[in-house]
Amino acid sequence: MEEYGKILIFVMPVFLILIVIEKIYGHYKGEDTSPNMDSVSSISSGMVNSVKDVLGLSITLVSYEWFETKFAVIHLEATILAYIVGFIVIDFYGYWSHRLSHQINFLWNKHAIHHSSEEFNLACALRQTVSSFVNLFTFLLIPAALLGVPQKVIAIILPIHLFLQFWYHTKHIKKMGFLEKILVTPSHHRVHHAINPIYMDKNHSQIFIIWDKIFGTFQEELDAVPPVFGITRPALTWNPFRINFQHLWLLVTDAWRAEKWKDKLTIWFKPTGWRPENFEEKYPVNKITDVYAFEKYGTQHSNKLMYWSIFQTLITLLFITYMYNSIAIIGLPNVFVYGAFIFLTVYSYTELMDTRKISLFWEGIRFLFGIAIIVSLGDWFGMSGLFPFASSIIIGYLVLSLFVTIYFVNTNFDAKKVPVTIT
Image (cartoon, rainbow, N blue to C red):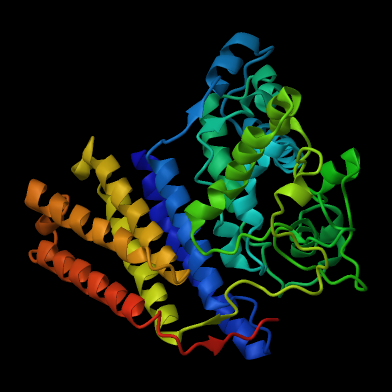
């Protein structure tokens, strides 16, 4: 918990700086691929995912350590060789877990968030799941366990492998020559995120593109077919929690409505998007049929609301940074209370971004929750030891946030909206 939090303290500002650089570069080139509201939603998704991971809110049914202890044929020391073998096996594991998440209905729920952005930029790399509470794919690491790769080596490689998947989420880097034959490049990954029929469910590899070529899922980016991004059942929300559970809710309601018990039981394991017979007519859902003729979500918005959303994101990042840096001080169970406050914060301001009037309810709950924390602890999780007036500043922020939410709701979210240029 604490060690991973320390790593994220270093990684988060690096990612944020690169996102800002991409934004500035896109503006300079006249090809802004990072609309502000979309980026705020993506970063917000990354924040709640990282909090979930730091708090350990997931279960591994069978641990890698158990596999390695029971089945290792040989035992490698933590040498360079072990790290190389571990990295290759994790990349193989990543390919298959990624591919299965695209192909099986109930597994798609945890991955849809990553594809939900209708843009393709560095920020969308941060759209990671908060809805996956059980790790089902540890068995794919059996090759590493058989080779006796130590558990501590796997534990080090996994976050590195994840962070290395950040850079290729961009439209600004074109094809990269010889590297296209070896590595997953931005061109390869643009194909993966595209909803054009020719590109769907292709290029599942994460670092080495070789797996797609071996298992028949490779597709080159074609000059004549510009990728269009998103998901075919568009999310139509900036709220990462809503996005995370939309597909699951559809599966639950379809299973409930299904007349045949076979459909109720098998819908979870059918190919992604499968629904019982005639459900598309009886219970239609919004679906993109022409990838070149649909309106992107949130292409118009209030400038004031946009700037307020950016402000809320930056403040939340500061809250999270303090949390990760002070886990030992905060202690148990208060760190879970802190995590709940972060979840409530993101839920509240992204509901406001969606111009939902119920956002005032959530902001009111957050305000009361924040005040209750300070009253019960006499401080904001020990922050006054570092900043003498920390509690007063946080109370002032909570009051400001509540009144700004009241303002937006009472003015119909600052109804004068300005269009966003979409490229």
